[in-house]
Structure formats: C-alpha cells, structure tokens
Image (cartoon, rainbow, N blue to C red; front, side, top):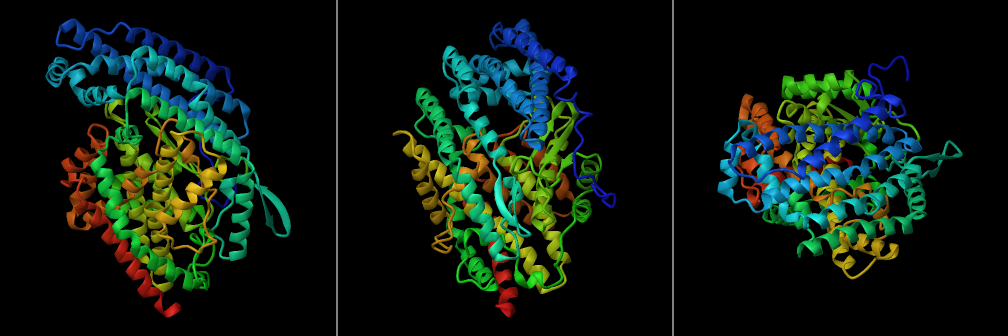
Length: 607
C-alpha cells in the first residue's frame, strides 16, 4: 500500500479469532463442535411447551445457550468466509468452509427439535408459556417465528436425513461454484499485453467502448468454459429444493423464500406489479444515454459506461479510496452523528477489504460476528463513484448489525429484504448529498446517471433474475435443463424485464453462469429482496425531509424492529405504511421517474 494513503486497503482479521491455519483455531473449532453436539443432545430432551415451572425453566436455560451457540457459529462462518474470499485459491480455507458446512446437520437437528415442539402449540398456550419467564418473554418473537417455520419442516427423521444429505448435496454444489468462479481467470488486453484477471477485476465501465466490448466478450468467453458444470450445479441446487417442497406439500416454490423474508405474497405482488407498471420511464433514460454516447441503442456493456461529457469535464480523473471514505463519512455525519461515527470507526479500524488484486472472489458482502459486535466488509474498490456507492451500501449493512448489537442474540437476525433496505438507504443518503453538492450540469448528469443505473439494476436486472429463476423452477419440475436452455430462459427474462429496450445484439444470455446469487445454496431467490430494499429505502428517504430531526431515530427504530417483527409489521409499526398496497411503492417510483425527467432535461443541450 502507498504510504500516501490515509486509509488501509486491507482488513484486519487477527483480533477476531486465531488464524485459520493455527493450532489455536483448530482448538476453537473443536470446542465449538463439542458444544454443538452437547446442545443437540439437549434438544432431544426438551420438555413440552407449557406453563409448568420446570418446563419453563428448562426452556429458558436452553434458549440462552442456543442464542450464544448460533452467534458463535455465525462468527466462525464469517471469519472463515473472509479468509476464503480474500484468498480464493487457498485450499485450506476452502476445506474449512466444507468442515463448517458438515456441522450444519447438528444445527438443523437443534432447530428442527425446537420448531417441531412448537408445531402443535396453539397461540394461547404459547402466550402463557412465554409470559411465564422474562427470559422467554424477551425473545417472544423467536418462538412465534419458529412456530411459523415449523410448517416448512419434514417429519423429524426425514428432516435430519435431509440435513445430512445436504452437506454433500445442495451445499456441495454451491461450494463447487465458489471454487470454479474463484479460480476463473479472464484474459484481457492491457497496454498491448494479454493479462489474466479475476472476474471482479474485469469491469464494463471504461469510457472507451472498445475496452468495454472486449472485456464483455472476454468475460463471456471465460464463463462459457464452465457453463455445463454450472448448469449441473444450478439443476441440482434447485432440484434438491423442489424435492423438499414436494415432500412438504408446497405447491408454490415461492412459499419458502417468502417465509425466509418474513414477507407476504401480497407484498411481493404489489411491489412487482407497481414496478412493472411504472418502470417504462427508464426507456427514456436509455434513449438519452445512448444519444449521449453516440449510439442508437445501448447494449449490456454500455449500461455502466461513463458519460463522455463528464469525462471531458469536472468529473474527470479517478476517485481515490481516501476521497471516497471521507465523503461517505461526512455525508453520513450529516444524516446522524451515530451513522457518521460508525462509518469512521469501521474504516479506521480496518473492518473493510477493498484492495484491487488477483486471487479474490468476485462481488462484495458484509458479514457479522455477533459475539465480537463487529462486522467485516469485502469488496474491490475500482476508483469509481460506483465503488463508492458499494462502500456506502456495505456500511449500511454493517450499521444495521451495529444498531442491533445489544439486542438479545436471537433477535439480531433479520431477513434479507430488510437487510437490503438498510444498505440501499445508506446509498440514498450518499447519492442525495452528491447531487446537492454538484455545481455543473455535467456533474449532476453523472450523479443522476449513477442513480438511474441503480434503478435499472433493481427494477430491471433483478427483475430479470427473478423471472429467470421463477421460470427455471417451473421447467425444472419436469427434468434437468441444458446450459443452452438456461441461456434461452435468461435471454427471454432479460428482454421482458428490460422492456426489450437494448440493442437486439446487446443482451447477455450467459449471465446465469456469472451471477453468484443463483448458486447460494442456503437462500433461494436471492433477488427480489434487493428490489424490495431499494424501493423501501427510496420511499423512506423521501420521507426524511418532511420528518425533521426525529427521522434518524425513527429509522433506527425500524432497524431494531427488523429483528423482532414480520416485514409488514416492522414498517407499519414505525412508519405507518401497508406494503401490501401499491401506494407506498408508487411513492418510491415517483422518485425514479422524477430523476429520469431531470436527467433528460439536463442532457438536452448535449445531445
């Protein structure tokens, strides 16, 4: 790292746990394994759920141990995951990921026993049980949610067998994809020489169209080399899930992902229905951006292209990581002292890995270590405003965990859709400040371009992923799909989601190969929660200016509610909106449409 840099580019992990290759870590892991086995055995002896004092006392003690054990497990997964992401080819880290995955059946055994114990308990019995001990009352929502989750459990023997088979089944296919994508190298031309880069290092945001085009085709060519193996992985991941759903008697493959997000079907339909009706305004953005770039229509690799008028103007030059950090901290401080102080602490204490180098996994994430009350952020900073937005996004995730750090351990878990609300809200805070500070039309256009690129991502790209996965699950019931058929489904989904607005030769049918989210074995439909979070955060941020100085506290209350409420109730109890109705979603989409209109207006002198 350059001595001139103010902030470190690599994270600090040594203070969290012993190094994964050390004897001390092996001992730590052995102790966790022993404690996990002990609690699994205890879960087999749990008494009935009722108000009988000895039963209540046994459950209260068990719940305390369970919260601590699950938090320690999350620590281990986060710690090993950080090392594996930063050094994707290190086989020892990959092996440890497999070891941790092999422990999941014991965890499943514990949760199965808890949930099946609740399955036949009625609401009145549960209420009396919870009120019998303050320790139970403190985590009442955990019991209520576990009772609801019980309907997604097979009979006990089948559930335990399924969890064991999953280690070398669905989760093994997910790990295989991680290894394939982590070791993939893309050959690109750089300064007259062919160089090999990790997927995360190959971007489509160069101001030179020839570079974007070459990067796109080079990346596509590289991903195509593993297409058939990825098709196998995708088929078996979804096949495993569909077999479970059939055994559970579920007719709808969306039931499970909706439950994971504590979300009702009516909310999902209201969100996608409103977005589909309103996102046509983005075609005006596409047409205007194409004209600014001197094109008739945009292609996939033009969507992230910088505007040429900006390249010639005040926004030229690269954005340093130091400058990005300072702006994020300053902007967050304007929203609330707590958010700003948190961002400064996370950056200065090296919670973040951003170095642009080969050997890292693609993408970005924020992962938490509950017992340490810390998070770690993984990304690759590419000296662009988009990278700065990613930094704000991941800090939003970390702040969410920070706000919940002193809540009961069992109430620090929150669903993905509400997690994405916190992250995209942080992006909105940054974007609004950058737009307000911009002095020239060129600068405003560049910032609006970034904002509308996000709108395209959440309303079109994510929608394409959702449509693809939805249609794939329907066809997968009849048998496995070839890599060619998967590409056909992806192309159709992209055309539908993007309203057929790109150049006829400008689509990316192989997108399903390169997108990690399709291969996350523990979370089906890793897509619609992003759109939910984006639209919810936009709508909430629009309320901030009217809410006055109390808004940061109101927002903080929402983040706490995400750990102890259903999604719809978390929002209605803090902001008063019914997410099952289109009103709130329209409020969010009004913001998108106003940005499109402003972009078109500002661009007029330049086209």
